[in-house]
Amino acid sequence: MPLTLDNETLERFAQQLDKAGKIVILSHMNPDGDAVGSALACYHWLSDSFYAGRQQPQLSVVLPHSCPSDALYLPGSDTIISADKDRELSERLIDEADLILGVDFNEASRILPLDEALQRSNAVKLMVDHHHNQNRQLFPTVIAVPDLSSTCELLYWIFTQIIGDSSIDDKVARCLYHGINTDTGTFAYACEDPSLYEAVAALMHHPLNAAEVHNRLFNSYSLCKMRILGFLLNQRLRIFEEQHFAYFYITEKELNQMGGTPEDLEGLVNYTLMMETIHVGVFVKETEGKVRLSFRSKKDFNVNQFAKRHFGGGGHNQASGATSPFDFDTTIKVLEENMLKELKAYYQ
Image 1 (tube, helix red, strand yellow):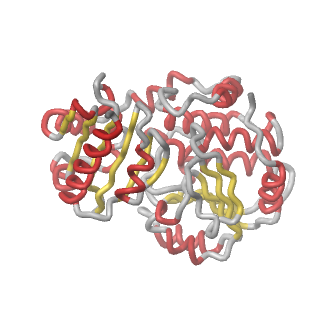
Image 2 (cartoon, one colour):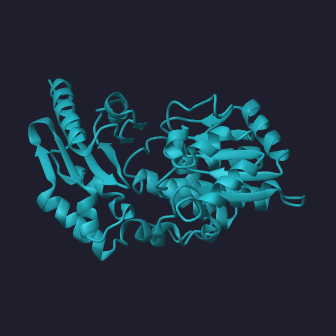
Image 3 (cartoon, helix red, strand yellow):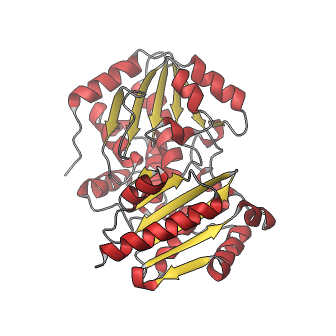
């Protein structure tokens, strides 16, 4: 059945949008398909439907890092402003905004290096997200459904409940479908709710070219990314069959030696779960001077709680992430010791 959202919150959300003169749509660092898709879907829905027939505010999409190459086909991707290319402009737009719409993140630490600009801004702040533990002091108005498939699915229900099905045009549909595909791994996980398939069925009435979307997301690895995957499988894969656990790791020096970028590492954590006996997989990667972890689970073991408990991270029960407070070697040690201990207890 359709996902029904609180009418009072939606009315407040719409009223605040009505009053805005300068809007910045903001999403998280190292943006994935759900981040880009949700930000661009908001951009098109606001400009083409919500403000249709009346004076429109200045709309900007700002990201901490550049749009990933597999999302460059999305309508409006060429309008995105990223802090890694123009930090001064990104911060100025945030400073000048009278409304900031945050999508697909729950905390200022998820938008480094734009966190300080967001925190000092006096703009009205709205958040749409599908993670746990939203910062409601930073974002007083929040529409959140934790563990929903994606922010893009949530936006579909928001858009249609505020205006109706007619507000989903071809551009909005393409952006939403891209994000849903990314965050569900083409409907491989986070996809048990019937509301997801109702939303997707409605989006399929638009010319999406679903096969093209799948190929862009999952069949478009660069030669460099394939070589990195080979390196990880051959030299950086640790397997603990008794605990049903495996992880990859790569240092920034190794990545640079292969000519790779952080984007080349996206999605590779999923390969740890392709082994039948492995239920929990992790990828530890050092990029841009930070140690980051991606967690995945295909059973009931809650990687969200593990990431939060040991690394201050978070996300979803079966897919989570964290930026480690430790150096690379310590991160590996903390991960391995605690994961093996907790999985041993879990399987007893």
